[in-house]
Length: 287
Image (cartoon, rainbow, N blue to C red; front, top):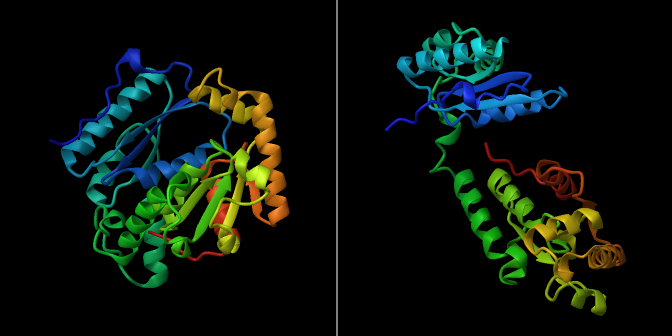
């Protein structure tokens, strides 16, 4: 059964939203949403965001137009529409809506066709049909590697790691590792730095031989206490005093060992991953 489009009942509308934004695609909509988010963050406004994936027939396109027009009437403002519709006939239908359209395919593909002197394939979902490619297999291997080496579970095959993340518990090592694996095919292991390591004044066992691959994450003690309290409220593990101790000792250990590190406090996972890739000077990319 085809996925249904989101309902726009009056009760579901956020009246405080500056605009309703639609991400319309004949595939997953991830590309349109990712690009749209990057653009929208430049504006200090609140946006109500709706993804419309798999708009791959005219019936679905007309249904999308109806939803966009409905939002226009109820908001009293033109919705903003980011689209990655490959088929021209579907794009023509959606552009009949009352939205303000940002067509990413028309904006980028057509100029590239002229520059390259080659017509694009105009294949729906082409960017995601890579299950048989080496890049896809490498990405799956990287995900499995990161899961097997999460939170110091294993010291096996560390020579295969592209990066080894260290830092106190709950500073963002696991999500960063998985993001690197999923987006870039980077094999990332991660290890917590714990009081035993601080007392020994050494890295966790087995990591010294791979110091060139190690990258550290830290975090503000106050933020760490908040995060830990969400997991184990009222525990000593989450007290501000203990968090300050662990963060200070972890940073001292990383400085002493000459480990590159950054604070995750005010950075997104995307920003942290980009910094790590720059440090690694990695040319791995998955498209």
